[in-house]
Length: 158
Ligand code: ATP
Ligand code: MG
Image (cartoon, rainbow, N blue to C red; front, top):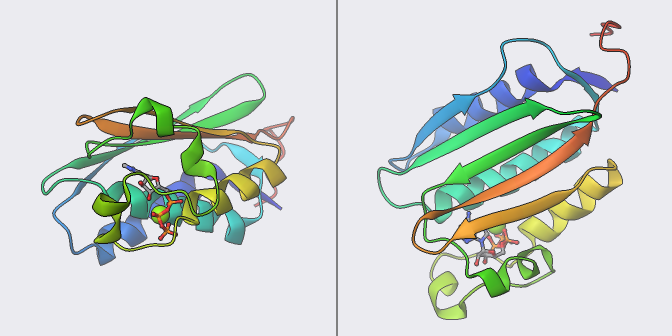
């Protein structure tokens, strides 16, 4: 189905903002317009849940999680950045593999199975999108993904 990805993203962030217990600030850098994409809403909700819970889990107290959305030629690019521990360059591609977790000692106490990003990658690729990460150790991590735009943005089905 076609959805306005900006309202959708705002609703997901609102939900996290209401339920969060940690001392993390959310910052939104989103366009003030409707942008239509074809998505399976449940699956992309799960993708966002996985990425946002990581950003919160690996953030320091008082850290900021920033949401960016920009329109490119044929797709929207969404980026979720945190100011957390970061990921070593050699591990950056592997975090999308099933059960892969950076530094077992560090991540063991934070819990999890190492499946969140593998599931996210599967779902984004099923939408003909791409997902990747950039990170600097000790400074933070950004997870990027794309979703194809609907050709004719004039058609407002919702
Ligand atoms: P699960 O999501 O199944 O509960 P998980 O969070 O460990 O477990 P993934 O979400 O797949 O698994 O992430 C894989 C690994 O990538 C994590 O264990 C962690 O080492 C690293 N990672 C993911 N996101 C971040 C982030 N925002 N900052 C730092 N490290 C991260
Ligand atoms: Mg996770």
